[in-house]
Image (cartoon, rainbow, N blue to C red; front, side, top):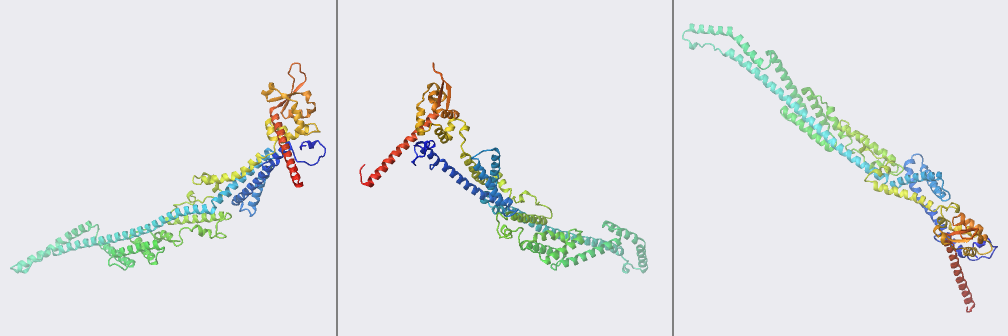
Length: 584
């Protein structure tokens, strides 16, 4: 007797399952049966959600780690528990609200898992170090160029001051020579008029009276014509040299002599080397240029060089009217020399050593980014200080460290990082997607009344249908024997074969099977129609070919079960006979 007959028969002794029962139990409880499949899916989804929980926790630490210590843990637990239990509930019942809640939970889980996986593959310390190294290299190069330019500018200013002073001293010497030339011409005119008419000589005259007359004429000539002619000649010389009077010439000469004397004294203070002023200026120039070159290499400017630069600037201000002060001359140099021993920016490892624990982790990555940003800002200020103007802006996108929260998203758009980012996103979506797919694939089968077609009913609810068929068969016999008797009352129906109905029987012959006919009609596996034959009255019951195939499968399984039972019985009898020493 099969398991289906137990529904109707009185209590019977225990026996091995037969026929349809073996088949149904195999479907449900076999190694690849539905029960084991459901257990496997539940276990696999639990493992996937456990992995997703870890990655979601890592991603949530980036966003929620600053709130309090357990915030990421609580968030990950809430998201993953919601996703797992809602995914499992879809096997029982699918509702729009459950789908929306599950979708939101899976989106949160996927995104934070992606962030966690991305930060594992590309840790914050790695890409922070890479971006900082790039910014540091750019600013170091800019700073080196501006620093070299500051020293070149200072050297050019020294050259300019010395050249202006040398030109100024040359002009003073030229003016002195011009004044000397003017004075010399005036002396020559005076000498000409005082010695141009010679007094008559006594030896030139035989008579003394003639000599006296000539000498008196000489005196009269000097007295009458010399002053007017001499004054006109002198004024012409003065006018040609740009003077109105001899007093103006005397003042210019005195001023020129004073300027030369002061210039020479100041040049003597600049340098003790060299005999002439020009030589002293060249000595100062060479000394300052050498000092600036040494300062650029060594990072320090000597006090003697600073003092010499100050005296040079003061001398230039007094002699040439230069507005370049000592501070203007040395400020760019001092800015270029500040912090030379330490470098423009600290290294990434030096900054990381300032963090708690001395290393960059997911928990302090944001703090490390703040340190990097502050270091970049200080470097920009120093570059602008050395340049003397704002040449770099702290808002320059090239000098920005990517925000930790946006880095995983921006990586999806960056061509160089898109491949790795898409792979991480695929892994995150795969874990949550498999949970959803398994839940849908292993959802509870719909009831018999909700089946959309007879074939889907047999494919999805064959076991439930078999139980219902057995329950509708008359009690007292094996259900499969009764099912075989039920089918024997039908005959082939070629007229309805095109409609999918291959068997037909008068309804009057199936009076004992009304419940079964009602079930099959409700399930779409049978149909009751008026009799169409001549002289026939009443109704005809039609059965679908799908039901015939399904019933044949049940009956075949019973035959295999009986054969296996007979073989098992013979084997048991043989073992008993062997034990008793008898021959069967």
